[in-house]
Image (cartoon, rainbow over all chains, first blue to last red; front, side, top):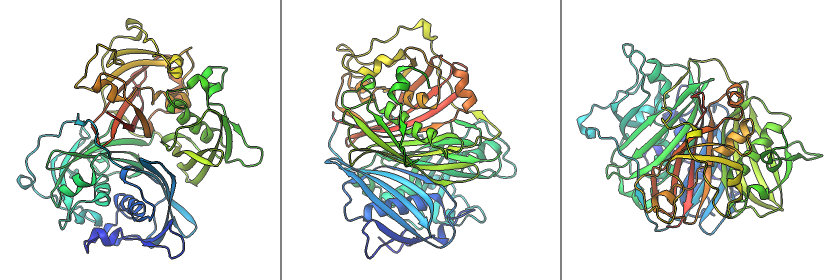
Length: 270
Length: 270
């Protein structure tokens, strides 16, 4: 934990009497159109797991379901280790405001083991971050100012963009100001891709993540090795319809390691 | 519900006093190496949501975490509607055997709406099901006998297969005997892909799904329209390492509709 705005935004305090309970507050610095940036909420939930006295291993999987838009103010997280095996541990989490459940989640942590290994996916070939311009954060989206984003492809639509047949965005991203990568910040980065429907429609339309899953491929050592460098992210959708679309994404290190793969289902009106 | 082996295998009975509780039994007909086929378990959990008196809408997302291998015998499912919004509903589920939690899950159901729609993914071009041979179910894997599987690419390894650089399998699949598709059977079909590491290694190695997510793109009408026809599935991995790999898959209808996209993280030794 540092004094970085991300750490302040995702800080939680353990409850004085129940080790499964943590208290936090929605971060103004990571505000979105409605409520806080989902990536910050997901990171805060993961932090509850990692801060828990009984945690076993490092993150393997996290699913976060955004049931209701958070109101500005305090919240309570319950993080319950449901099953602890020799090699992994299963968690159920809920975030409440007052007596109202707002977010549910499950997580798996695990003890990494030496195995045969291979990365089958291919990292997109793009110019280095310093060869691309830094995106100006869009008006009224507080959280975007905490990231340095450099699009190689599929930037946010402008009034002249028009519709696109391809929902792919590929971008370099790091915390702004720079901050050493850890599992919570990697989690938040998994949600840094704006809704793919914006790209397809060439305009902003109402949209919000309903459920998001992160698979953490990187070991703690690999995460540490990224330090403050940009990560390369690429995201695309497979199908839009009936009010929902999916997004599927990869996050790569400068060292060509595939750190995380992530998926979400998003509500939209268009 | 029919008399089909799938319906018998995934049948649950509502508890007489608590509408959030259902009782079931592990299905011998869908036995796997250890415990039942994960797809049948996932389908049974979804059935608990769909059978619940308060269900609102049809399935949008399902995440199932396999915390411990089920023992043969009875189990109890609790399915709790945590938040019900106008357009969607969030669920938390647990499956217990005795007092031991074995599986956790979250689900989202939603009321579909007319929206702009497009399928951006491309259906793989392969021969029709009747132009491909039906796979002989492997010895000792009971559940596989309940599916007609016809590989277009990436069949199960044989002693002569050798390692492969590509983890992709593309296959036609339907229930055997044929059965009209519904959301529970679609859920089970999302887990029909054998562990991708088998293909990469050219042999069977210890492996088991840790967490699985399904995004249901199809409306109830689209699911019904598939009737008893084969679906086309394609699955591949992005990264193997530290004892875990991911699988990401699509399930397509004969009518070219992308019915579901699905992801899982799998434990392995190799």
